[in-house]
Amino acid sequence: MDAGGGARQLSSAFRGLHCARTLAAAGVLALCLVARAGAAPEAAPHVNTIDYWVAAVPVSWNIVPNGHDAIEGMKVPLTDSVIQTVVYRRFTENWRSRLRTRQRGLRKA
Image (cartoon, rainbow, N blue to C red; front, side, top):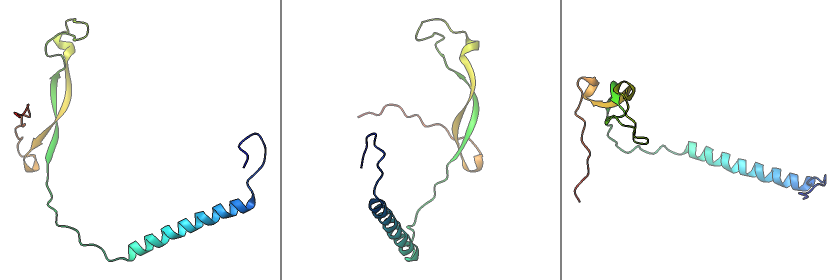
C-alpha cells in the first residue's frame, strides 16, 4: 500500500478479503440478534414508580441583591437588577398545593 504520491491501488485480493471479513462480521451480528429475539423474555423485576409533581413558576429575581457590581464596584440600580424568570417548585399530587422548599445547608460532620 502506498501512502505517498503514487497512484497505486490496493490489490483486488485484499479488497475481496476485506469484503469477506465485513460480511462475516455482519452475519455473526445478525445471528446474535435473531438468537436474542427468539429467547424467552426475562421477567421484569418489581419496581416502584415515584411521581414528582414539579412546575415552572414565574418569579421576579434580583440578580444583584447587594446593589453593587462585584467586578467594578459600581452601583447597580434596582430597575436594572430585577429580572423575570422561572424557578422549579415541588407540588402535591395534581399540583394541588406547593410544598415547602427543603433547605440544604452545610451538614455537621
